[in-house]
Length: 92
Image 1: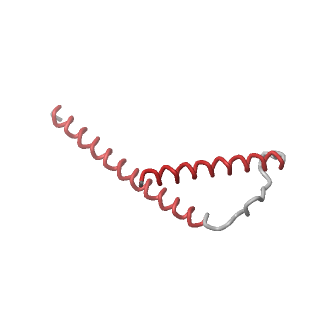
Image 2: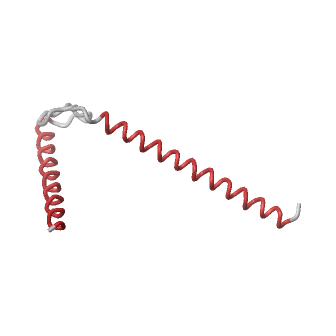
Image 3: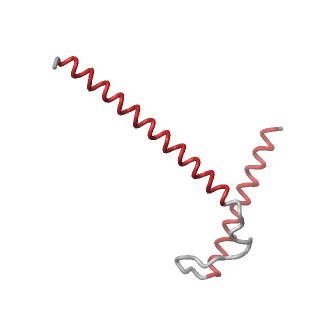
């Protein structure tokens, strides 16, 4: 085989492999997005009422869990408030 022809075949083969890898990654990304949408629709149901603390897998004391949940809720509320304030300030 002529050396330049061998290089061309290697380049074509590499391009072919790149194409198939890219296509596979796109299909995987689409599959992940569809799975995420399924999870989000399933998560629309209430699994736990506000203020209830489930048993945890590492057996932390319930009082500690209540404190952690309260602090996380406070932190989340403050982030939402900051986000709301920044959006309303941008619009004015």
